[in-house]
Image 1 (cartoon, one colour):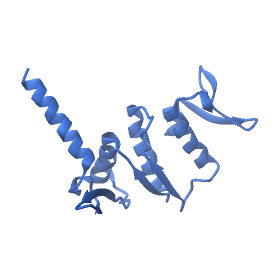
Image 2: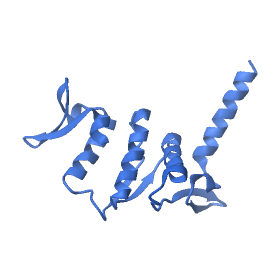
Image 3: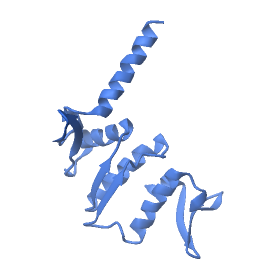
Length: 161
């Protein structure tokens, strides 16, 4: 999945890592876009055995510096890692990533992976935590609330023209 998304393979030569793409050649990791470097790092961690069954992966905002077209790729990656027995903790502020994961959990989770959505929010000067098996069941979802606010604002502007 990842090599297809990267349109190439990760290779190591003389203690340096490159993305080798057909028709382009070798690109040094430091010259790649940040999103490609992130995905390439995950590929390398899988290849060298750092990420394997019974490991834990914490990833804060995997969507940052990632082209939105890569969000479905990240979702597939997370699902495949979970199927292999990797426990994932992902935090996001991305509506797209949140929705992709929510749709998977609701409609495509045929392997019955244990997925939990967690929302942290402030209530009466106290941090509260809410969990749900389905994204739609969260009562406090600031990402969804902001998306709805923006959509409503856009509709108001459009129809007031």
